[in-house]
Length: 88
Image (cartoon, rainbow, N blue to C red; front, top):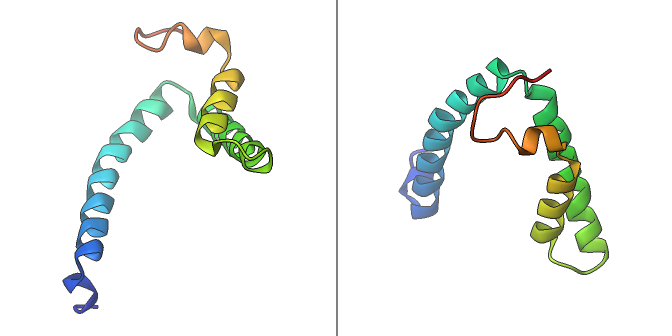
C-alpha cells in the first residue's frame, strides 16, 4: 500500500477522491432536501443513453449525453435552477 502512494497519479487520485467526497456530500444533502433524488437518477440514465447513442452514431459522446440530459429535463426544473422553487 505504501508503495502505491509513492506514485504521483495515485497521490492525485487520493486528493481528488477526498475533495469530491467533501463536495459531493454537501451536494447530496442539498439534492435530498429539495426532493430531487429520483430526478437526478433519471437524468443520469438519460445521459448514459445519450452517450451510448453518441458512440453508436460515431458522434461526440459528451455532446450526445449533454443533449439527452437537457432534453430529459422537464421545463419546470429548467426555469428554477437559480432560485428556490416548489417541487410540486
